[in-house]
Each structure stands twice: as structure tokens, then as C-alpha cells.
Image 1: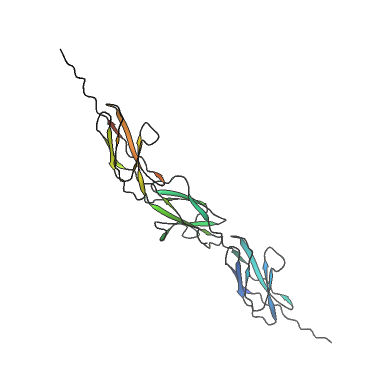
Image 2: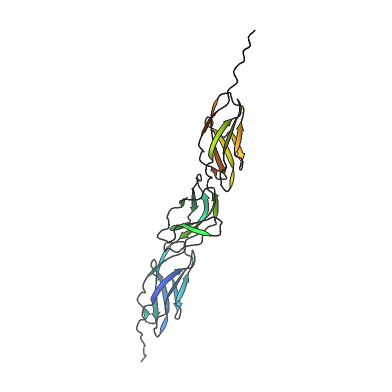
Length: 289
């Protein structure tokens, strides 16, 4: 007579969980089942009937590879012995990490106190935006947590200092709220503030000296003087220059001008306009015989 030994089925593993290691790998772990006669473990996906991996006893983790970025994977594990499989462990749903965002660019025109930036999200669920004045010390402006992060691929950063260089970096979150590394920083200037005290003084019948207060702006390139009757600037001047003599005018003619400061991002708002007349010609001299 041949004797057969039967074993009770093993107890289901406990503590089954996953941790994303990268955009294409998840480390699945569980608590090693204390069962005699245990042969090992089988890890299953919720989308497949057969085990995706079979491991010997003593193993309490398995790294799944070849996955897609920021995708949720649902797995579970069973212990098994010569008599068969245990019940399923608890299921665990984990996302792989999201790809880092890329290609930050400034879109549209900068304003005196704001910049609008956009980026390639590369499949992130949400995004965090940081800015910096020097590219070293950073401040989070939106998305300090997953709950406050934004889902769009653009952001209007307002309340900035005028004529100031800002550096930006963008982080992506995956579906579990795990943050990725940021894309490379991008920098951009806000627009300068407009000049003040713009006024004119007639020097002759055909010349007016226009003057203004020098704008205290970093990254300033210069000034552009405009006439109310023309679209393009009538004079472009370097930073530090606070006057310009307009010539070739007609006697006793009224001229309305204004000035803008400008930097690499564009022009400031218009200064206040000033209206000035050139001098009149002297009266004609009559001589009687």
C-alpha cells in the first residue's frame, strides 16, 4: 500500500503592496507566509488568468519591469504548496512614475508683473511649478502638494517684480501623487516699468527736447520715443539716456509724444503723453520809407 501525505493549503500572504521605482518598474512586496511545506509564491495581474511570475519560498518581493509610464497596475499574490494555492492576498494598485515634463517656454508677451509659461507634460497627471531669481534658490508657486497641483500644461505666474529675470522648473506627479524629477529650468525677463515725468521743452522753431526720469530696472536695454501720429518708434535710445532732441519740426506746431522702456522681453507700458509747441517765428519786420 502506498501512503500519501496531504497538506493543508497555505495561508494567503499579507501586506501586499507596490512601490514605483521608475517610469517602467514597480517593486511588489509582501510578508513571507509562515507555512510548513511552502513551495513559493505566484504573482498575478488583475488583467491575466495565469501567474505573471512564480517565485521560490523565502522570496518576499518581485520587481516587475517593462511597464508604461504613469499607468496603474493592479496585482496580487498567492502562496502555494503541493496541495495547491492559497487564497488571494489583498489587491494593490500602483502607478509607475510619470515622465518628467520637458520644453518649458514662455508664451505670448511678458507683462510688467507676469509671465505665462507652457511645457510638454509627457503624460503627467498633475504639475508643480517653481520659480527662482537666481536658478539656485527656488520657491514653489503652485502645486506644493498633489491636491493643489494643476492639471493643465500652462501657467500664468503673476505678482512678479518688474524687469526681473525669473527661472522656472516644472515637476510632474503620477496618479499616486508621487513627484518626478523636473525638466530643465528656463529663464525670462518681466517687462520694465514705464518711465515717469515725461515732458518736452521747445528749443527753437523746429526742435523740442523731450525728457523723462530714468527707469530703475535691471536688464534694461533702453528707451523708445513715440509720436501719437505714428505706429513705429521715432527714436530708440540706450539705457541711461533720459532725453532726446527732436528736430525738423515746423514753427508753432503742437507735437504729442510719449516714451517706453524696453528689455529683451519687450516694451513697458506707455509713459504719460506730453503735448508741446515749437517756438513761433518772430514777427515780420516792416520798414517804412
